[in-house]
Length: 412
Image (cartoon, rainbow, N blue to C red; front, side, top):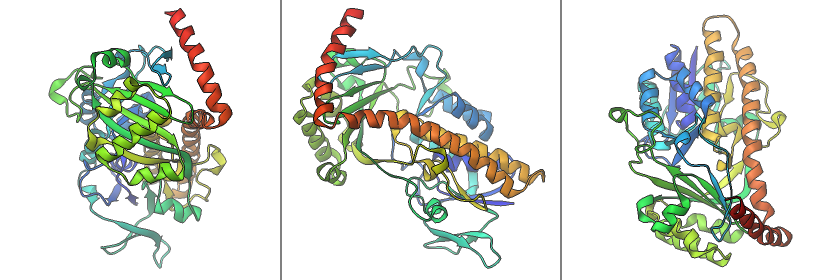
């Protein structure tokens, strides 16, 4: 049995690694010429995602991943702030958390190593179809078609494969435009270093303005203390932040800006909404070249709406099926679990204990449940942010946050 994977993101690479490790014939194709040339900044992997990875890669690669990751258990409690920087509350104790944060570039590089020469870079897919004998095949813009027994779309939010299966888009804009960047902790003032601390946090203000600040320190707070194995892109304490605004004609126009120009306009948007100057320091002192804009897309949270096609020799995984906003930190981890689930089911086809259609049917059932869970959690935060973008919501936010801040001070 031959499997062709379209897309070399995290989910596609994890699938290729898992199939290769099980001895299956797999080929992956991605348009990127360099796996390190990727967007995104860091990924959270919970215990389930790590277990899935252990099924797909060697112990050596898993050890290097953990040595290059930041352990959530070593961080302080997550924090919630208002637009003035007043503390509203804390998240749960992370002392027993098995989750880790890792640079996307680091994870993608390790997975590409596990895929070896089964990964073909610099290959742009034009679409999918069927050969004369009915077998699925992948069409390229600059190379002959490739046929397979199974084609898997791991080509992200705008997946050609999933759109072919569903007869149209599998997701839509979630109503939020996101902005991201990286800021070294040492570049902040002492006051902001103390306020933000070695933890992640979220601040929400009126009119749909929100700022997530993630803390990443693979060197000082590693998941595995093995410096000789470390290959993390982040080499000192860093805040990797994400700003959010409701989508609109004006906001969407910011997607075309880059670097310092985007950074300046972003700061102006927060100032217009009454955010305190010190709360914006993490944006103002970011590396300008790290600042980027992107749209949140989301699939339906209903299990029955995901992968709305009959199981067959073409399927998909990850954001191609259940595009998930980053507000729950579960998108990449869910794609990795999809990959492990599909690999496991296909191994039974290879040993003759089940048919391909039966294996894909079982995989897609599990994939729908995983996708629905991740989407439901992510959309809670999206809806909370959007709820403040109305006259009533803005007023309620402005009135309640000082009360919550006062209550937090009393608790301390």
